[in-house]
Image (tube, rainbow, N blue to C red; front, side):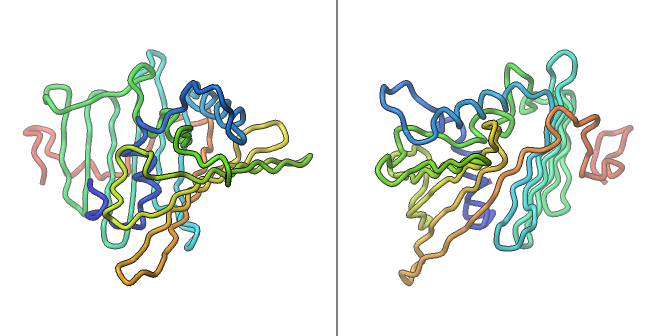
Length: 241
């Protein structure tokens, strides 16, 4: 799924999912604003056994991406993913043994007998269940403009990024700026984070795309729903109908 094919409105998701493996903290001897809060939140997230993630378009208030997952007693992951942008919708369900994928009404099916099938676990986490969901790429943070603001009730951390220092970002799409705001409660627990992408259009005007990411139902997911109608798959022949 390329950025242009799925729309610029999902840039925040692409930052989280496509570049997730490169957005990791490093062991430099300097500290950026709010680093301890963010690292603690990332560590807490990967320890969860289940959760729901919503990526909400701040302009519309609608959840444009939903990711729900749960690990079983052996650490094998079951997850459902759903995303919508304009006329494009994508859904996927994977229980570690079989996978259903639907894109704009077209359903495909894989199982463990297919070479391209991938299962996920605590040891091999799905990108959206890994720490990269909570973006932090220390080397690309502009320490001069980033800040932390704290009172007795909550804390706000804001990181402005130098996107030229983030591998995997295609600036040819017009992306010229990126910042992340993190909000924590008085105990330092992450409430949500907001990713704001700045795009310079062909006419020189600037558009901002803002998405908030909420992690809810932490360790409370009892079963993972399948957003795809699997009755469209023939059980006898394993073919789509």
